[in-house]
Image (tube, rainbow, N blue to C red; front, side, top):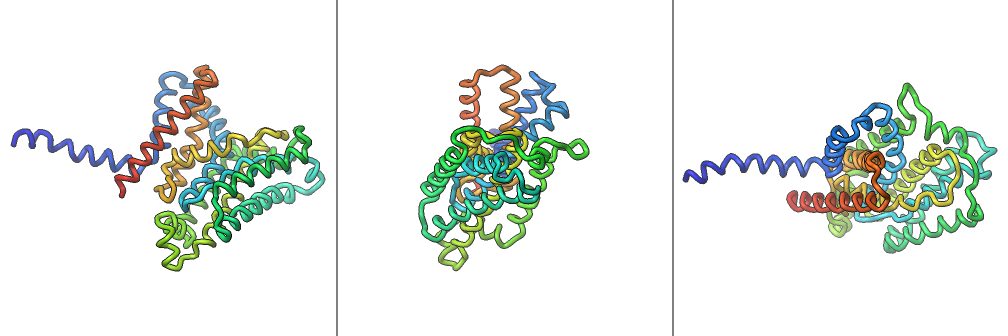
Amino acid sequence: MMAMTETAPAAPRQIRLVGLMQICPPSIWLVAGLIAVSLALVPTLLSSHFQWVILRQAAPVGFAICAQLLLMRCNSIDLSLGGIFLLTNYLTTSSLLSQMNTVTVVAAPLLAGMLVGGVNGYFIAVRRASSVVVTLAMGTILTGLVLYLSSGNPPGSAHAAVVWLGRDRVAGVPVAVVVWLGVMVVMALCLRWLVYGRMVRAIGANPTAALISGLPVARTYFASHVLAGLLAAIGGLLQAGYIGMGSVRLGFDVVMVSIAGAILGGVTFGGGRRSIVGAVAAAYALMFLINLMTALRFAEPSKLILQGLVIAVAAIIANLSSRNRG
């Protein structure tokens, strides 16, 4: 009896800890850990100057992560995000749009991203092809197209409007950060309150049951891929502006980072809670981690190993949390 009395208070604490892990995605815990390590080893990284730099670096990545988590929540995936980043960079730095007005220079890459997403969505939603196969093929096609059009050479400098989006500040805040967080707020509200958001949750939970219930599964898949293409194009636009020049190698790591960020954000295929908040924290955490490792003079192989370990641990935590919720 005494033993039971002594151990009883531990149960509520354990329940609270489990509940907190379910509410907070792994990216939140990673951010907290990185801040603690930075306070102890590299406190200058927490200065406002470096924090704005990290957030500006995180903005393009954040759009890719948001695009991927949106598709993962409805049991799909997009492996062509890197190709969209590369295509966007080419369109904004080549002579194709150099003589156009600012609206065209900004709108054309966004429309191209939506078109790529629409093609992906058509084959996946209407023709019921594998999302892995379709988007992998699309990413390869886009990469080959850019290499062909550019003859393997970087095109040129980014348009002034694109550079403004990627580098300039408004009232001391980087424009890229304002665009990123503004779009993320809109996305969070849409997924929370609109019918589309409820459709994504229902299809992700059980696609077969959603189809039997008469929900517009195909239209939701199609719309999600179009929206993912748009988000990737915005990210590519900010990336091109931040770099300021053309590149034929941009986007090769975007797919890996987007999937890793979605996992860090607490999103698994068909599930995830507070995913937009987790995605924002994941993008920030990944850039914070890279800057911290650079400040600590980690070698490149060590950086890759540590990033892989962090993502693996995050995947395990997200899986355990989803099981506990179930």
